[in-house]
Length: 302
Image (cartoon, rainbow, N blue to C red; front, side, top):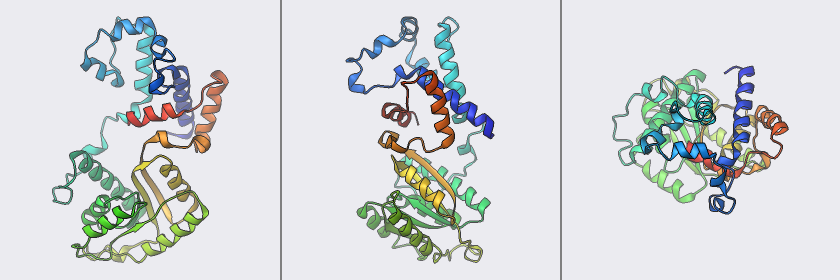
């Protein structure tokens, strides 16, 4: 989307969220206290209770019936249109080659799927940027880092705030013959000056890594790195963004967030463009603002 279109798109999104805030802007435990169900238009209720479970599942994909009230059809259609970027015709995952190694066999199917797609995306970005180093924030047991190195020859530093995860990740690497390509450290990423200095030290350590198992990789190393996160919880995504903006040696930021409801609203949204969309919407809906309830729904939806 170009600059002008993204502004129009975001304003359409915030307008929809404000107009229909009664759908989500409450705590689950308050659903009866504030008569939330009574706010659903009666003609919507009449039609929605009559459809099957399978039809209900199709609502996010634009499913409607001709006899439905115009307001309900417009709501479903508008939601589908604004979410169209999530339902691309050609799915990225269809282009990802299947990893037939035993690397991920201990993981659940869901985790295997995530690691395969995320690692392939990171590999593509690194190819474009001619970068061979990845800083993985919230690396856990290091499966993503292992996939990046073993499949694509990328050097990785995995950072996690939980010491037992760091120890377990190091234990898993003991049998790896390429000893200087993946490093795991206990490190908590926060939006502080101290963290920024410590992260610069991590980047210096990254320059010492090299891959000895894929010919030509170590000779083509660049000084830059990409910062990535798979399931970056709450404010961690925002803190990573701050690091990305501050550090010239970080050339790309690839992140899949989660638990948006844990985000602190004091600096949300971070984007100036999104802030403008929120302000424009508040001129029409002055009481509306992005809320924890909305962020929780977004976390469930993604």
